[in-house]
Length: 325
Image 1 (cartoon, rainbow, N blue to C red):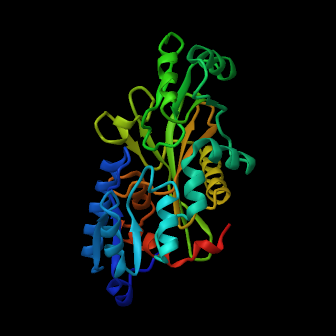
Image 2: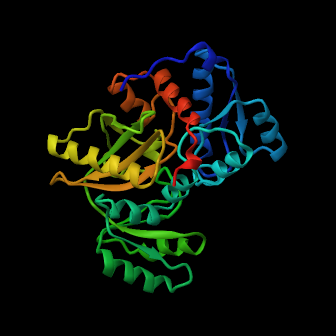
Image 3: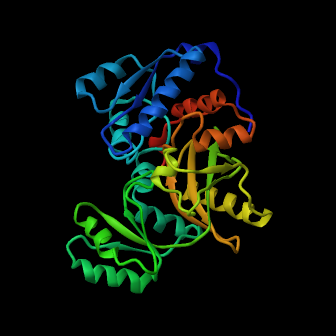
């Protein structure tokens, strides 16, 4: 994919980098936001940083002179369509996917339903009823999905809250009891390699797949600690998969990107079993944008510098996604 550097007119247009927020992914958001703002500044772009957690007046003032908003933020209230809806109401162009893709993509159960209908292979899952008996829910999940299985929040990113219940694990009811506080789900566990696939969509709507990235951890679980760099994790890009699996990953990533109506760019997480079958786990409509983040690693492997990646994302704000479904 060929990306042309920003021209003088694009560099002179002021950009608001929205980051921070109040979600459990605030730390990751700040890392993305500060890195993006610094890079844009180095590219000659007039960028200033806005923290979504600040007051409403501060946000509105910061957006008043902005030609567009660069969303370097993640988690609830930012990646779930609410921020996108506010920006569309204000008439401020923004980067990333629109309200529909953001809202559905953040809700793992809804997203799996849509991408599955588009031919994407997903693990079996069940919603955990918040008001049901914990022991009964644990038994129902085990009966439907078997053991081991995964318990996780429906609308969190970064593997926050993810819990793996193994064959000799008697703490499953304790994990399911967390569902009393928010919407949770149980999902069939597929052992294998954790692989991420990035998709960049050009101005004509053509999807370009970046070289897949494999995250190798000692226990095979790409956990929150591994993603935050506080646990041992080795990266391989391109991922160590065969040609047939590579084709399957690319096909499923593009199918999911389109089924969810993602725009400009997206990142898709898979697990690849020993048999080479890839299982789609979730989409990241606003993936982390640090220079060592997964998307930047994949872009670099494709010959796309960090600055050109940001250029592509920034130009995506110029497309009126409100005309899309």
